[in-house]
Amino acid sequence: MNYPLIAPSILSADFADIAAGLEAIRRAGADWIHLDVMDGHFVPQITFGAKMVNDIRARSSLTLDVHLMTSDPERLIPAFAEAGADCITFHVEACVHAHRAVQSIRECGKKAGISIVPSTPAAALSELLPFVDLVLVMTVNPGYGGQRLLPFCLDKVRELRALRAAKKLDFQIAVDGGIGPATIDEVAGAMPDVLVVGSAFFDAEDKGAVIRSLRAAYVGRPIVC
Ligand code: DX5
Ligand code: ZN
Image (cartoon, rainbow, N blue to C red; front, side):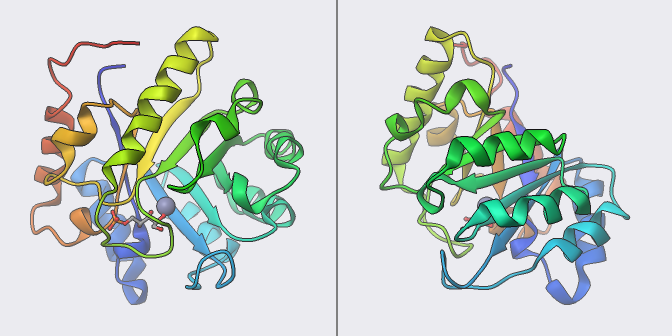
């Protein structure tokens, strides 16, 4: 696929007016909605729980991409599945029995994603890759929107692409943190399949133009693997 899916993160939306944020995402022509769940333990902030996903599900038919930045994510899976998430991603650093957690997401009929923070190597995922639908490579230390991209994390995207090709797997690779028009040239060099965009989307006057510029950066690039 020589075309990135764009997933605006509602973390950067006005939480007092989520409906307006959803409408902005729809109008701009985004592909997914990224929902950052923070528990005040795995990361310092607290955002929202399954009810938010449930209420957004009632208002949007876009793919709901839940990113659990929580300790002990396994126990939260049923509630987020029930709430209408399409894909549930958790951190390998937060879960000893990650393979079991992946299985329980799939048993709920949802896509299973696994994420790594900047200090975790891609190799930490090698045993899980055959079982997941998505790998979310954090390109900032998770916990806050509006941080600067850490370019060394993009090497992990390249590594995962190579592993995917070598093992003939078909998971998608997403990047999250510091993605936007200012960094897209660097990011597009690694060709992740999904771009999570928080502040660069919500801070922009013309949100459609942000999405168009991110997609345009992939056009004409050769697909390596
Ligand atoms: C950060 C979250 C991100 C965040 C990205 O911990 O996981 O999804 O919304 O925000 P930006 O795009 O502003 O870095
Ligand atoms: Zn996220």
